[in-house]
Image (cartoon, rainbow, N blue to C red; front, side, top):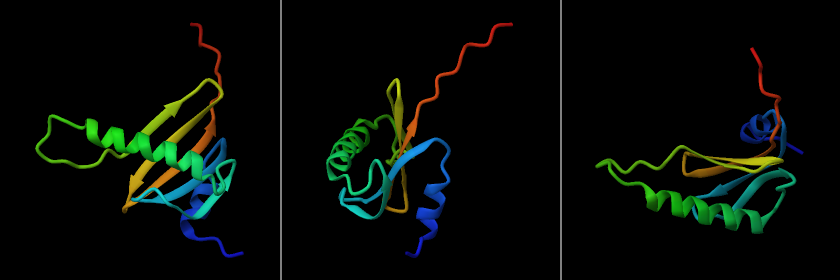
Length: 102
């Protein structure tokens, strides 16, 4: 199987357990893997969050889409990035670190 440059770079994200790439309509493209492989349900929920975040942008004359959206849970997180009319989603484990005492 041939690996695209996009998929190859997504495979190297630290602590990643899954990823997917969607087009601007929310359709999952050929690039997906791990826990998010071909996960149309997750893609639909994430696309709804992206739509809401885009509608919430106010206060600027220049309407550029946001660049990154993070959804953080205790055990994992979703990192969503918009670039080149594609939506990149990475599901990562959320490492718990002990507080540093000085």
